[in-house]
Image (tube, helix red, strand yellow):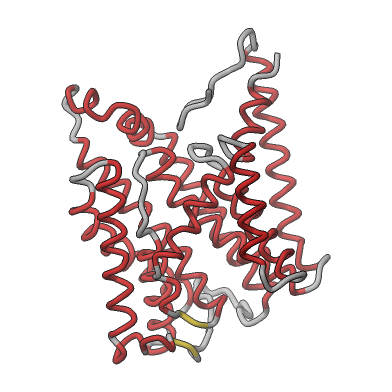
Length: 333
């Protein structure tokens, strides 16, 4: 079984064979990125919108995977940081008209600060108590967003904000869906690389050790609570980054982005793709969004059929679709 943050070779596999597999995987990933970048020139704009949503939901789920798949912390309030980034982005664009680069940086910082405040309380607890406390804080954030009408405009949300320049001296027409999609693609790839460096760093390996046996790690002199809090803040920051890009894409920031049902999406996408596998959440996000898009074209009872399909997938792919495929590929002789 492949653990979070580990790469276990198949029995009898040679280092050369492992290097060849990694080379093939890297080449396939590179080809995929090139195809994604060229996608707007090949497909109608509808599929560009779908691809943009997949990328943003994938980043949202990947941020959750950091604390769940690698840190063993099940959060039911992760949408609070996604929504914080979305609202911060919408407010900055509406009142200040900042370039998009400045907006997403500010929104990411707001989400990280919120994660630090909430995480300082939540990381004191474990397992179901941690999950319930994150849910409670998520509901509190939703109540604030929904009722603070003078700032958030209540249930109507914030809309009508302009989408100006990108910044950094680049003249990009962000109102063009193809241009915005490519901006999202580049930002998500950079964010994914940063997340990958984190999970492969000594901090990420120590976080995985905490997930497996936090008590034993604490006996070695490691401040477990501090490491859990750092991971929680990092995950909140990346979730805020996804929200900061999602608000201009959706052209509105509304309370639904903060609701606890929104927190279920990264949980489902991560489990569907494969928790503890770095690319699992992106794979799960793609499956979820594509299934949702496809089923809604045929029936208004899409949630029923989507639930059935997802239940079957989870039952037969116990480690997620991507995780199961990767495990079987790694276990080949």
